Picture 1 (cartoon, rainbow, N blue to C red):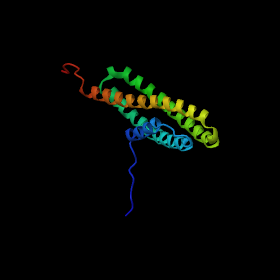
Picture 2: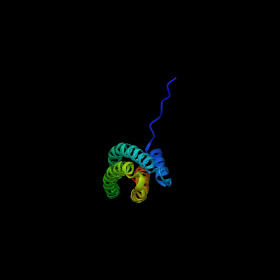
Picture 3: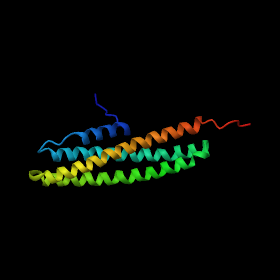
Picture 4: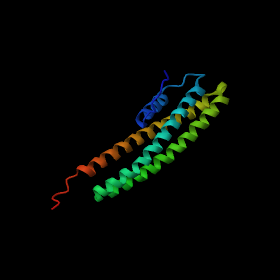
Length: 152
């Protein structure tokens, strides 16, 4: 019987990425760590792009349900653009770090410091993605359940 692996959702991919980023790099294993981080980053990027595409219809529905939430929707659209750009940037950075780690293995201290700095920023990115997902869910529910007074 063939085993079929489920495609992770964004939440799972973020968790896996965060676990890699929080794992200390053992001397001599920097290339593997960078490769793992890059693989996770690419997965997060792909899933994030799909999620951001889903946001388009959600934002339209929020605006239709409650036009007074338009300013919140605009803020979320701007954050989506920022997250997309940051995601692309991290894919590039981890790709470069992985390539550099391969050639710098005997003297990996400089690359390890750089990888650590990228990891710290990437953890902040993960938090921003989670906050955005929570904001989208919150304003969507608010648009559906908000008490707008009598509609006679």
